[in-house]
Length: 267
Image 1 (cartoon, rainbow, N blue to C red):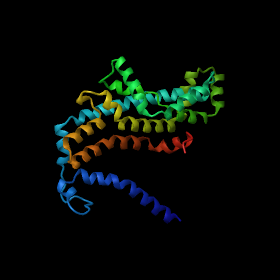
Image 2: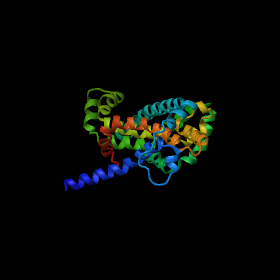
Image 3: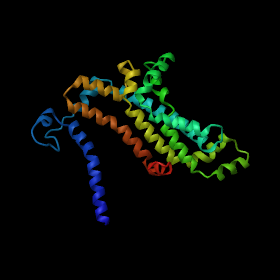
Image 4: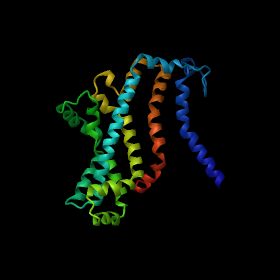
């Protein structure tokens, strides 16, 4: 039985990793290899120009910096908001708590495209059009992250909070010293998901950002697609580079990821 499980796991890993491997092969292949007959699992000649040419001709580094700034700031602010709101909905008692929570969660059923027009008007009214903050601010509060935070914190025993209250601790101190140390798995899940959403976000940055130097990587890849057309090697090389930060973030937080998903009630 162990052999079958191992074989199944290896087969699944190969199936999931093969698209990444194919991206690497395409990123270093010449046009002749890609257009030639047959299936080439490795290029006949490595073409590093697919990587160096776009980097030298376009502000790819600036796009990467913009994406990192937007993703990191959005992750920090969104995770903080979700944790505080999740604690309020899980452990504090106030009128209309459940109704308000249901209303917030119901926004998950609203397509993102529906709210883009009012969001755009708000960004214009606040003078944030064309800036990184115009991309960050409208989506700081995520209903999905709030749901996960509330579900996770509801599993924290009320006796811990009551004991801290008996010691005279304020709600803010209880949140910082009692609840937060227990929320490391939750924080790992929120960081991974929020970073993934913000890093891969395309439509909203495309609407808000006007200057090519302020583009994020995802918008910049569309710009490269229009420039390179059928040069799939260069396009795939740039796409491959854009995956690296996401892999790094997952590697840093993956140890707590499974525990955080399980304890948040996400099956």
